[in-house]
Amino acid sequence: MVSSQLANRESMIFTLLAGNLAHGLLLGGVYGMATMGLSLIFGVINVVNVGHGQFIMVGAFITLTMFTALGLSPVVSIPVALILGMALGFFFFYTVMRRLIRAPELTTLLATFAIGILLEEIAKLIFGADFRGYNWGVGKITLPITTIPMSKVYAFIGSIVIALFLYFWLSKTRLGTTIRAVIEDNEGAKVCGVNVGWIYALSFAIGIGLTVMSGVLLTMFIPVGINPYMGGVYTLKAFVIAVLGGLTSPYGAFFAGLIFGLIENGAYTLFALIPGVAPFPLTISLAFWMLFFLLLVKPTGILGK
Amino acid sequence: MKNTISKYYPLIPVFIAYLIMFLIGFSVPGMWQMVALLAFYCALGQSWNIFMGMTGYVDFGYVTFIALGTYGMSLGISYLYHFEWLGIGIIFIGILLALFLASLSALLEAFIALRLRGAYFAIACIGINEGLRYFIEGAKLWGGSEGLIFSGALMQALGREVANQLTTFWADFSVFIIAALAAFLNMHYMRSKIGYALTAVREDEDAAKVMGINTTKYKTIAFLTSGLLGAGVGAMAWGLKLGYVYPGDVFVIHYTVEGIVVVLLGGAGTLMGPVVGGLIYGLSKYWLAIIMPGFQLLIFAPIIIIIIVAFPEGVIGLLKSRLRGTKYKMFIE
Image 1 (cartoon, each protein chain N blue to C red):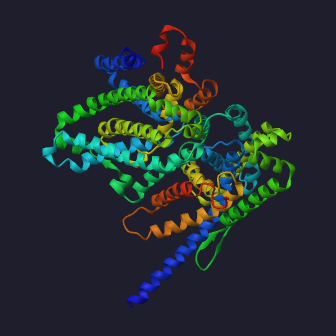
Image 2 (image 1 turned 180 degrees about the vertical axis):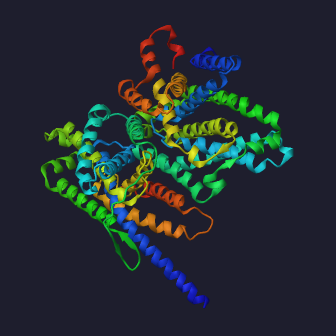
Image 3 (image 1 turned 135 degrees about the vertical axis):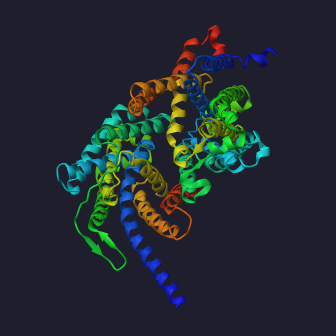
């Protein structure tokens, strides 16, 4: 009797874990996509965008506004977010970042942090500080282990499509190869006649565009979590993922995102079994200890040389 | 002899500034809170400057030390208040705990994170800060996310009279002391072997190493000093003064950024910089909070960006280049 109950409990935990890992994989794809912009920007202009999460927040608000005010589905928001994000990217590049390309880390970190605060405060001014959300009812699929809303599946598919697009664009087109050349060696690229200044601007804008676009996909995972101050925690998660992926490699970031999503949800399920702890913060804290460990052991990332 | 004293001349304007601030706060009724706020920013900038200003390393997680300092004081009071024979001693135990926690984390960070450079170092520091915060919340350590509330405990241990005096006067007064101490240490390091070694690190760390400078040692000294002063500020200005601590309130990167802004406004790596920056930042923040409550950040964000882009060397940096070659030069550093 007791042993059958125990076996029952074990199988329940297993089902729970498997279900949460499935959700984690889907979320991980979006995390990965959300980090590609950070890695691209760091790779090209060597700036850590501390205001990264705030751009994700912008994407979330674009989706929310288009859905609730105009009745447009999030699919339409994806190109809109890309275009608006790139416009924001060009704006901040030419007003601020262009002057800080060779500046010490202190100034670039502070500048991007200030940009983040600015976005937060503007969003608060427009939308207020409440938590909001919307429900994109496109059905759900039932697996033996768990039920998954289709919106999450679409978000996952969307992130893979965008990641593939970026992959082909960076590896097959002339502009893409130029960007990779600048990441490798910007002096060398300059010698070969590359207009490095324009590549900086374009990469920054694309990085921000990708980030804002990932905000659209992320809204599928946070039914009532859209808020001007939602960005901070995603900045920090993006750091962990970017370091896991090697910091300068957008593809590395995507795979690292998948791994991170799995670890996060798996760890959450396991921490929830320990009595007397709060599993949610403990999971976030695990992410940072992981980051710390990685920076020490393998700062080049899991795919790095 | 004259040489030894004259190297500390630049401290004179700093100490005069602190003295004037203290006297204004002490004698003009209603000004004490504002002066305490200014002293807090000056102390924050001054302590942060010791490591960052001299080495060029960006410790974006500096607030960790302030937070741990706050926790040290809070733990001392919350867990020891029923030992009546300790009396006022619990404050000193609190300070010791604050310094202990901060030095523990500073040594750990120095041992591990200081091997990293540039952006990697900044990210590692942010990671430690957030990791600690969520660990305290997650493991329900030291009250978890509910924090510790100990103003009642303080009154019970020392009596209402003494507790009031401690929280309203001595807590702020000790921030002045810490600010002055930080200025002195800053000056002392600048004028000693440590300062030269750290400047070498800032200019070119690899070259400094090749020249035979034990860069790790000097970086650790500066890091530890900066962290301990930060812990002192936390223990006094947040722990003792407020009587409570929540992890979500103290491990906040905004405070690191405020420290950086103070230093940058005045001039990074200078002695007067944090004082001037602290005064400008503290006064404008206080004033904005009165005339436009709720909009301070909206106004500050573009100002920060403008300062970074247009005046990266800060007020003192500008002044220094103006006064070069005049007799006032020796007072400005």
